[in-house]
Amino acid sequence: MTHSIHGKQRWLALIVLCLGVLMIVLDTTIVNVALPSIAADLGFSETSLVWVVNAYMLTFGGCLLLGGRLGDLYGHRKLFLFGITLFTLASLACGMANTQILLICARAVQGLGGAIVSAVSLSLIMNLFTEPGERAKAMGVYGFVCAGGGSIGVLLGGLLTNLLSWHWIFLVNLPIGIAVYALCVALLPSARGHAHGERLDVAGAVSVTASLMLAVYAVVNGNEAGWTSVQTLGLIFAALVLLAAFLMIESRVQHPLMPLGLFRLRNVATANVVGVLWAAAMFAWFFISALYLQRVLGYRPLQVGLAFLPANLIMGFFSLGLSARVVMRFGLRVPLAAGLLFAACGLALFARAPVGGSFVVDVMPGMILLGFGAGIAFNPLLLAAMSDVDPSDSGLASGIVNTSFMMGGALGLAVLASLAAARTEAMQASGNALVALNSGYHVAFLFGAVFAAAAGVLGGLLLRPGQPGGAGEQAHGEAVAAERSRAPGGGAATENY
Image (cartoon, rainbow, N blue to C red; front, side):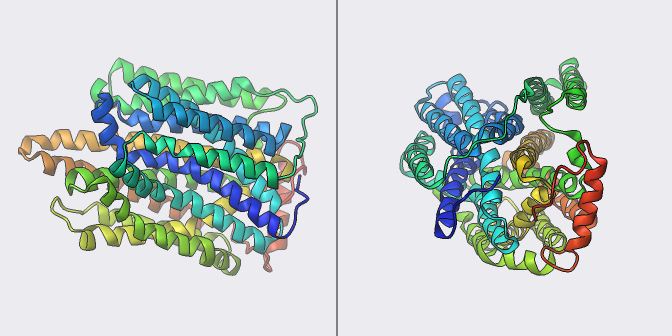
């Protein structure tokens, strides 16, 4: 399904959609700078504090597939408006929260609204822009919002927490949500989905969400409960059983939430694996570096936000301009691999940052490399994830790639936080608490660098080398058709990019 709007209205619609996505992405990281203030105000422990982030990411990731399929069936615009409404109301509840339970529950509802918005917005953009050059530019803007929005969230979180209070990092969403809703109604035409008696795969959504939540809970509490304890092993086993049940459900139901045959498409499968690893590395950057700047270097919230500014500016420059030209010139594989390897180098620099580090020597070089890498890599990653999918399944494909991002972030953050805590606990015998804390952060940064490097290598080796719009496009299309013919449903999908 494509939308019958043209010219400037399409680009205005893109701005509105990206503004809605920006609000969602901001709330993934805007809380990071405010975490110490939230912990002090509501009495969170170090371990339970992670759930302020993970409650959002888990419902987000768990509901993305369902949100994407609902958009395909009942209309992307309708679902976008519903998601914005739900997210805005949940933001109000977060801003008014005065207990741990209320905040975590409201964050979970925020994740549900955010999942719906993110799942359908990417498919709306893909259907608005069908010409390769314009699509590359539009996806560059979307990629900047996804990549740069996280670090912008850190800056905005620092400003709001420093000038007002942590409550305002959520309340600021109210006017934005209202404006996005009104502009979407004015700019995007109403369009029906293609539901024809299809039944939603509720069992699949429940099983995969429960599986991921149990897995993350087991990892987050692994240090306290013990990695070989009955609780940890039991939760991991239960998560694996639910995952197996999900795969069985998807292989048997008539209208699966996630058709397994989709992963026979090489670019789709590779992009999602790369997305999981890259998201884990990104959250090592956002979450751990914010803690390092505050708890080791003693930065105030506003200073932490400003420390991310170089990365924001670089990501904006590459995502909004140069990245689209690089993709049209070199295809998807080379810029993706190069960008992720640059990001890995940036995280490796953070893994050596000392207790008495300075911004110019120990912080800014890593930020510059991470900004450069993210700005280059996100556009080709998103295009690869959506490139082989039929427009009627664009919501599903969007939901899958966003699920990979958010689940990679949630599981990665849980693993990295646990590794950092374990290292810090082991080093506390040295007597210097600050050195022990920084040593834990070093371990997290190092593993984040490994994740990013692995993502770059996999993307460079496995992505199809065909160049968009170039001479290799026909062979690329033939390969897609061949893979589609082996997938369930035969040649029902066509190449979008």
